[in-house]
Length: 185
Length: 185
DNA sequence: TCTCCTCGTTCGGCTTGACGAACGGTTGCG
DNA sequence: CGCAACCGTTCGTCAAGCCGAACGAGGAGA
Image 1 (tube, helix red, strand yellow):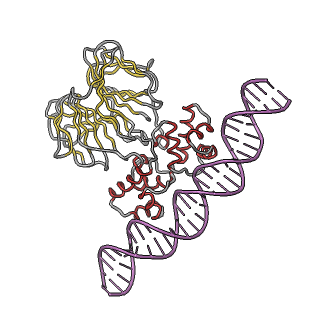
Image 2 (tube, chains in turn yellow, cyan, orange, purple):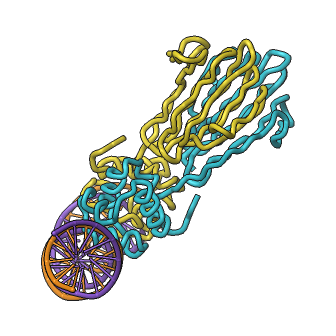
Image 3 (cartoon, protein in one colour):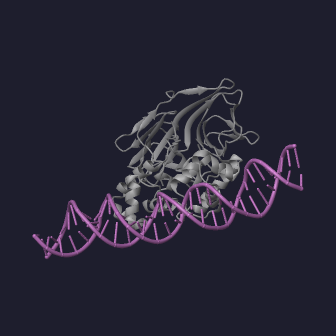
């Protein structure tokens, strides 16, 4: 997570969004209801805007507020079956492959998980506010917060809070699922 | 996306994070390097903080800046295979089931998609900055931005920009995949 | 009981964010 | 050519954000 002040990031983000919209700084300022001189300062990275000033710009640009603070990155990227770095568990036949960690400011990781019959994989509580989404591709799984586990078959989907202990287990010879973890930090 | 000023949301978020940390407002202010009176104002929802003031609080709370502006929600929820509302395509044997739309401020939708051999499903450009992640569960797929499609087998993963036309096609009798769409708005 | 410490709110003063006006530069039209 | 419109930057002014101090309240310890 970025610890230093975000003012330069914000300046770059505003310039980027304005270029995407294809309008002048005077027009963006007009639409956002702020002074041209204020926008000029923001794009130059000088000064320290109030939240409402920045919010007005995000609204007019049609993007979430966080887009102006944490810019995204894109590109075509392929990870073939078996190519990702698989991390196993010492205490259960559980394997997890991280396919895509969220870029700065994006609060999710995308995993392919697989397992065979055996000990459950129990995970400690993650950061407060963490949510998991699990979508079963193959086999039967039992998963969820400890004490609230549900059984899932291929095509089934479950989402649950992961900021307390939770587990994944399968009773079939081979099972796999997609796991999306969303967290505040 | 929330259009109204976020000041009340910010006040509630600061109180929530401080409660999570289990410290007094005086201590939070001390750690963040701001005046107690300033924090008192922020928690009461009066005034309009500068970005740096809010940033200081986020840093000390150990959460991304956007967490103070866009709070999350959680709960255990199950959608069984075939239960979600499946939306078909008139021009191709393609079906998409939305399992989880991102809550306010979260920039992603989670779909289960399926198809049979036939016409490709072509999607128009989404909002600028939109990214898609596709992870194949079953069958062979050909997917990606038009002109840059890649072939994918079970367990393969691809991510690509979806802010331009892109398509999904399968040449097998039955195919399914998990699709995560991330977008700025 | 009194004293000390911390709390959260209110207050007055200083600094800086945001404003509108002015300025020089560019473009398009008659 | 001159004029109008628009641009982005700089400047001076005002007011609100943020500061530290003061205050009353509550809790703990002697």
